[in-house]
Image (cartoon, rainbow, N blue to C red; front, side, top):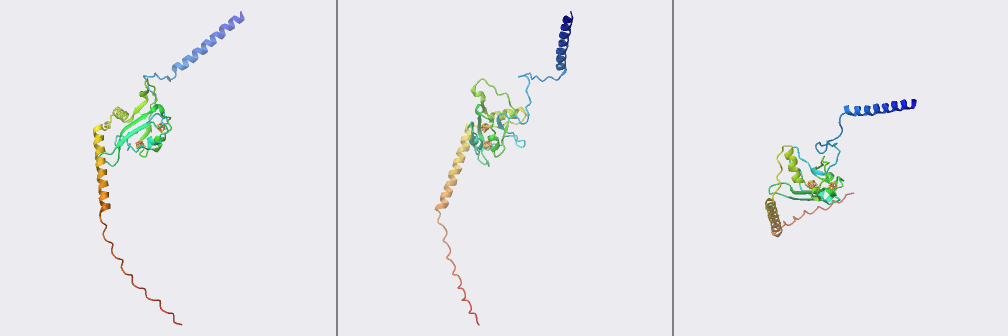
Length: 208
Ligand code: SF4
Ligand code: SF4
């Protein structure tokens, strides 16, 4: 009889302990994220894929297509191109494609960029159904990000615009080369004859 009562008490106590845990978690803030309806806010040190920075002053990217990042990348996964438009001081990126499935997030591209044009994204949802889902066109992505925050989208140069800029650049280069060749062929002005140096007076003899 005593054992029976003891078992009932132990069972009741374990029931109360279980209910206490349930009640405690019932009143605590919810930590479960309802993925994919809810999105996590990542910490500032989180490294998503490298992406183009939106310059707060110009509201566009700062990439000058110098190719330092693509040359430095150990996985050789960045494909980019750029062109210098007539009158512009620097090149502008016309293509910036990143095959993220090869990326080791080593950060060399971000470190080496001379214009600080790259940063790590906060994106963590990287799953896809196709291989192409891991290929990021950063100029298109930049447009989407700009539109998401109400900024005007940076236009991507068309093939015709790129061809015209390349033709103008080639014509300017040819003109420079012709000018340099003409300068090299031009006769040099006759050199002036050296003026005769005045003869130095003989040193006076020291009288004893
Ligand atoms: S983080 Fe490293 S591997 Fe990834 S794109 Fe940049 S340089 Fe290449
Ligand atoms: S290193 Fe920077 S500026 Fe140069 S191509 Fe890469 S992102 Fe553009």
